[in-house]
Amino acid sequence: MNFIDSSSCLENCMLASSSVCRRQLFLIRSLGGYCCRVHMERGGRAISSSLSTLGADAEGVMRKITPKLDPSLYKGQAGKVAVIGGCREYTGAPYFAAISALKIGADLSHVFCTKDAAAVIKCYSPELIVHPILEESYSVRDDEKATVSAKVLGEVKKWMERFDCIVVGPGLGRDPFLLNCVGDIIRQARDSKIPTVIDGDGLFLVTNNLDLVKGNSLAILTPNVNEYKRLVEKVLQCQVNDEDAYEQLSSLARSIGGVTILRKGKTDLISDGLTVNEVSIFGSPRRCGGQGDILSGSVAVFSSWARHHLSTKNNESSMQSSLNPMVLGSISGSALLRKAASLAFENKKRSTLTTDIIECLAWRRYALHFDPVIACQKLKRLQLYIPNGFASFSDDVNDVGVLYVGMN
Ligand SMILES: NC(=O)C1=CN([C@@H]2O[C@H](COP(=O)(O)OP(=O)(O)OC[C@H]3O[C@@H](n4cnc5c(N)ncnc54)[C@H](O)[C@@H]3O)[C@@H](O)[C@H]2O)[C@@H](O)CC1
Ligand SMILES: Nc1ncnc2c1ncn2[C@@H]1O[C@H](COP(=O)(O)OP(=O)(O)OP(=O)(O)O)[C@@H](O)[C@H]1O
Ligand SMILES: [Mg+2]
Image (cartoon, rainbow, N blue to C red):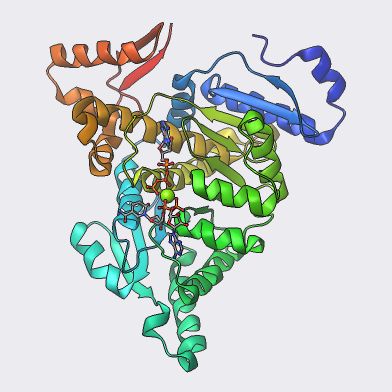
């Protein structure tokens, strides 16, 4: 398949960065087939884009990096994540992110939030481990700030090394003292080499303090439309340009030193500055709040799994080492969220809420609970979303997809 124009590429492969791009693209393809639309560029100029936009291929990546359900594993080995977020105003967002991580398959999910938020979040779910340690300005006197700040960091530090990934920002709020403490937590995660997903108010913090993430290849930023606009204006000092969306996104990622950026929208665009991947799986027309929070928890889990997948013995090779696990995790997280949203919408239509989508994160087993006749009807309906597509069952419990969807 003519993925990249080989003659012009051979000429262009003199540049080391270009060959890294090519290897990444090739490897992403071999992980999951065509990973939606994959785009490669050199010197800021697009040199090629692939032929197809197959949602099912992002699912291929997701399947590949998902660990087997292995009876010899013990608690924690499938992932331990933490969400730093939750304040007086927002308790839903950190809950959505943390519970999604568990529902996707992580073993342990922690939340570090303010005292006011902690009791509420604990009541939503007994599964979450909730640490009421963050403080907002109103509860701290000026002369106490340095001590309180050191105490907050000390509490998080005790746990940090145990996490496979942290998510910073869902429902964090914008209190200056609290954000200052969270800045220290982001620095600590970076020193400990813990992958860090930055979302919501975490992006507000980072946009105004770019040094917190600059050059950190283990950082993933997941901006929505407003957050992306602020980031582009601050970093590139221009307006968002949808005509050159791929180029602008990869230029943004490069300008922040190779962080991975997942730009959320009608389709999700993912770039680490080397490649741009587009996930365009049919999602949901409902835009209820909280879907981005599910995504951040989902990306955290899949990035940890991708990192593990690429570091295991079977996968050790110089080729594999040039794949970016943060990109693979972002592709997978986006694919799963969008798939779950489409299934939730199929059932609940306009009344679809974020909690309904969370229930559909187990979509791969979802259809098995139905009588085969009903399951077949569901498959047929699913096929309608994908012209020339197919959908089929697998009963492999170790696989991410019991329900497969792809192209003929
Ligand atoms: N159920 C929940 O608890 C939810 C909480 N959410 C949280 O809500 C927060 C905001 O996210 P959005 O996606 O709405 O952010 P956006 O930046 O898309 O929109 C927020 C709007 O409110 C303004 N704004 C917010 N806080 C402000 C402040 N302190 N001073 C001045 N203007 C302010 C912004 O400028 C913007 O216009 C995040 O922490 C997010 O995680 C959302 O995730 C939705 C669900
Ligand atoms: N117009 C759209 N059509 C289809 N899917 C979309 C659209 N906009 C966003 N999404 C999907 O919804 C998910 C959440 O994106 P959204 O822009 O709602 O994030 P958010 O504003 O941060 O959400 P939250 O309310 O959790 O903060 C993304 O993964 C994206 O794929
Ligand atoms: Mg958000």
